[in-house]
Amino acid sequence: MFGRKKRDPKEKRFKTIRDAYALAKGQYSFVLLRCLAVFAPLWALGIGLGAIWNRPGYAAFVTFPIALLGGFFFFTRLASNAAYASIEGQQGAGASVLMSIRRGWTVTPAVNVNKNQDMVHRAVGRPGIVLVAEGGMAVRALLNDERRKMERFAPGVPIYELMVGNDPDQVSVRKLQRRMKKFPKKLAAIQLRELRARLKSIGGMNIPIPKGPMPKNLRMPKPR
Image (cartoon, rainbow, N blue to C red):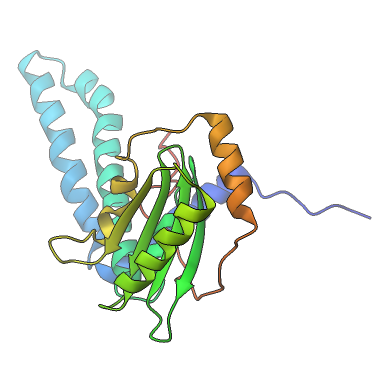
């Protein structure tokens, strides 16, 4: 029997760019023109500086990849913002963003849910335990209940709380990953392994998670 054919890396990169473009196009008009509006002035500036030193051809060659990188970076920002906009306000959006964090955290979505679909997610990492709540006013009771449970199962471990939302005391979906990276690392590697093993048996609940590429860790191929 023949094994499954591996996808060519170039094909993977093309699919990633195509998906990101489709996502950005759904939120923004004239995506290519927007990117060209960043690329063209950067390249023109480089050529202009080269002309001052009577080396416009050399400057055009050198600054072309820099201008291309600038346009590409702007494109990834558009795709990132479009990805957030596509899930913002949806049930489980906070869990979707948390689960897209690739390093340092073990996320269990919906460890506590009520009948109104308010929910609390649990993230475990070197900082300790982070409880992330999303929902209405009743979610505070779920958050307090989950905190008491964590204090019982993991005494002495730092516990943090975050509320997903757009109010002044909340963290928006767009800033959630950035906020998670700001927690100080307080657990040693062996302590983290013990904590994960202790909490593994608690588990969580199955909830609908918005699908689609997530920003910030959206892997984009580097221009060659």
